[in-house]
Length: 475
Ligand SMILES: Nc1nc2c(ncn2[C@@H]2O[C@H](COP(=O)(O)OP(=O)(O)OP(=O)(O)O)[C@@H](O)[C@H]2O)c(=O)[nH]1
Image (cartoon, rainbow, N blue to C red; front, side, top):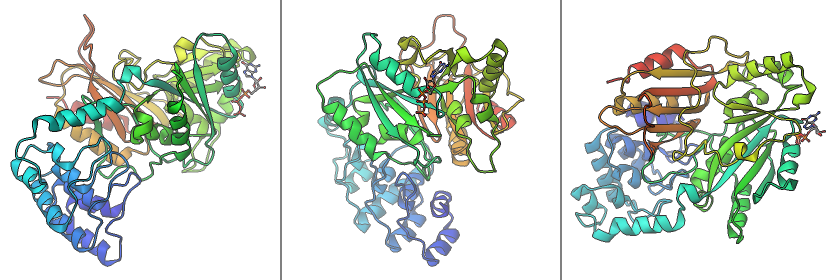
């Protein structure tokens, strides 16, 4: 995405060269973000001019939030050049961009601005009308259930033969008093590099996302259909399970919950569960692949929130310990539950809220020091604990840069944050480049030490750089 990067940097020379070479000025990345979106977000009017002249699509909506370049330009935030953004609004309007287009939340560009000049250019009154915001929010509230009322969705992954079908059968046939729907799917053909999601973005939450997005996010049309039909039924499910055979990266599935209004309004990703065959997993983990070829077994463990260490009847105590160590060296934070024939207390597996800011597992284990022994595949966990407070602005810049450089390799990230000037307890959790981030309602527990704890799980992570980078975010 050379064009998008040039737009973000404000690099006119490179952009000119790319356009002369015949690059499409409307070129979009995997989440539909175009050069105009990026130039508008970063307040780069000169870049915007060049793209407009080259005939870029003025009203392109991204697939992440439905935002057009005008939505991006109208946004008020700390990033880039604020004056430049205002100029971009004026230029877009002069060029014919449509200010009446609504994003996925039903909001027009003017909703995002309190600047009278910007609002005038967008054809809105200088002050937001009393009901402008309320209307929008009511509309939202109507469609988007609160997090706690959404049906939790568990993504079940696991290598061939690990016991996924056995788990599903157990869940469907056992009398556990829960009403559970299962969505079975063959995801073998999913692009393993596709990227991610977060479940529920309420007003108080924020998303840190690369401005030029991820190059390969994919919405699963088949999944959208399945969830629409579930939503249309007059049944209230306690949980939905998606079985994802052969898939190394659950990101495209999770992505669907974030970008598809019909799905995300009523359902939320609860957790990623990985079935592991205790007898055979080690050989799969140690299976050396050519450079660039993904080891699915390693990836599945890296993405998981919980691991069902199954077929425990087939291994000795010693073998079990070896496997547990291997799993921990890849993913230090996922809880391991030992099972036989995939039988486990469902309360431990479903509705655990690993992706929810409301019920985040705040005190999950955080590896205190960077682990020295990364797995052969280069996939490992890095935990960072910091005494002290972070500067929110510095942290945002650090994360934005990290995600721009490492989104593909950063599978999961989770953390508890303490910012200077706020007594709130912030949590974040993410898959690849998209991160849900916000304060938790119940705040810090009594007696809990208010410190920063962050875990990154991914490939070839630079532990020292992560430590230093986060340390540098301290006030
Ligand atoms: N000994 C033993 N066998 C098990 C256990 N759990 C599952 N199995 C057997 O392992 C085999 C594979 O289990 P499945 O549930 O079909 O595995 P799967 O993950 O759905 O396999 P795919 O659909 O091929 O990916 C079956 O023959 C199961 O009966 C267990 O805990 N112990």
